[in-house]
Amino acid sequence: MIRLHQIHKSYKVGSTLVPALKGIDLAIERGEIFGVIGHSGAGKSTLIRCINLLERPTSGEVFIDGVEITKLDSRKLQEQRRKIGMIFQHFNLLSSATVADNIAFPLTLAKMPSAEIKRRVKELVALVGLEGHEHKYPAQLSGGQKQRVGIARALANDPHVLLCDEATSALDPQTTNSILTLLLDINRKLGLTIVLITHEMHVIRSICDRLAVIQDGEIVESGKVAHVFLKPKHPTTREFIEQVENSAELLAAVSKEKAAGRRTIVRMTFIGEMTYEPVLYRAMRDTDTSFAILQGTISRLKDIPYGQMVVELEGEEPQIAKAVSYLRESGVEVEFL
Ligand SMILES: Nc1ncnc2c1ncn2[C@@H]1O[C@H](COP(=O)(O)OP(=O)(O)OP(=O)(O)O)[C@@H](O)[C@H]1O
Ligand SMILES: [Mg+2]
Image (cartoon, rainbow, N blue to C red):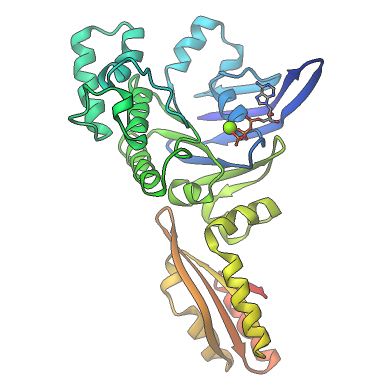
């Protein structure tokens, strides 16, 4: 669906070239929600803007639906761009136009007949849940409502792809969740491919199927969200996962337990339906060890259950080793703390 091949981008600042992207390779499938996470300055906005060529890569190719858009002339590129909608952190609405006119804007540009525009705007307003607000101006809307207008406008031309540049970063947590739910809903209803960039792991965890971690213009890790959460490899990825896991709290609890004389303490990470299975109980029963749960949490990655537990294992060393291999064979990540 979207393929980036060896994308390099450098900005000219004075007489020097500042590299922002250093050889990005990325393939995004039709219908998936793909997240890109990275710290400020990592190159996220540059990357997402290279997908619709709002930013021209210094070198490399961008393919959309098999078409190499980096090779198109400006008229053909304009046509291809209609397949790609985009929303922004600060909404970028026309302040002097009503909600309905903001949404109609790309349709007017595309010279759609006005009766058809009216019908389409009504449809879009309903899709994003803005009925009754059509005649208001952006200044009369909340942040979440403004982003709904942004989403409706981005969807006006029936794009195949929606690019989201920090679309929830200016919103409070509750409004963020409602916008994420809307994006997930649109993805499912319309089969729309969504690429979103963020610096918040919470956003990735809530709705993404796959993710890439970007640092200093390079992708340092990528994969299915569940897989990356279970086995993060890069330190930056671990740092982002800690945003949503409260590891500091967990580790404080562990050192307290250690001080209290407990010895074999492990952190177990479960994923999928297995979270609800008594794997732990079976491992202990079959190896003649026992355990004490010190802390546990269960959350979700999109629609997959995901749990973490910190336990102390009690028993003879060889038996504990057996229990740990049993757990690992059952797909539980076990880490000694
Ligand atoms: N127009 C520009 N001219 C010069 N340098 C730029 C320009 N845009 C971005 N950069 C530089 O390129 C690098 C990547 O910037 P980019 O905006 O893509 O990062 P980002 O990950 O989106 O950051 P943030 O989270 O702060 O939005 C940074 O070092 C930035 O200073
Ligand atoms: Mg940015």
